[in-house]
Length: 348
Image (cartoon, rainbow, N blue to C red):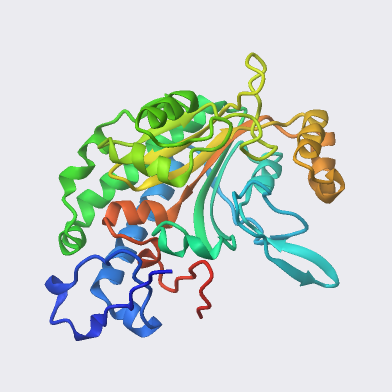
């Protein structure tokens, strides 16, 4: 794998000389990384994004919860990533790859919730150079009881536009240091975000001579190609059944099509969020779990909740580091993390 050695940022003469990282650059030592004005600017931008997101969602009636980071099972829908087992008093537990199951469970007590949740996904080592993959990352997770896909997409668009506008208003010094033009965000802030279906995305990629499986998620390079063709975020909707987790609800009027979406950032930054209307029917969930080749018994606590009844819902998760990477214009998601963990790289 072609990985360039890290630049020694400590030898640079001042903030103006710090340029965004080149492709495939690896993190320097923790001390050098934290001392970098680039890192510090990115983390201040991230802090503003999260503060604004909490303000927006709180104003919309959402309650912030602190959800578990370990449990007997976790989200099986993380594409290509391995789960991490831990010994929990003699029981094999998982580190969370996402909080989806707990989000649905929490709706038995609250109508609208969100959390900023840590996730661990051991991505394939070959993803270390994509610039967008981390082994440890955070998601802004949102769930709406009684909501449909349209409600989730409106909320995702609203919180992203509000948070980015707040960065433009309050972090001009950091954006200038990072070389990021605030006018680049005008289409995002002014909205609306674009919308295309999965079928339309596949057709566009085929026209561009990109080989995309019509029965699978849009692959990373395909997302990048589509993302480079626009200056504003857009949603891809209606992914085919089998391409996502068992909790994405199948459209009853269009068998084989899921009521879900991805949110794609412009300028080649790619996917930042996935969401869906959730399946909450006990029998259909059992069937969907079996279709994926998994044993429903693994999900005992979750299925007991479903059998007793949980609200139908819709929700999404936004990758905090990916959103920060886009706003800062940096090449790598790890540049937006204080102590980054990259796929296949042992780090403190």
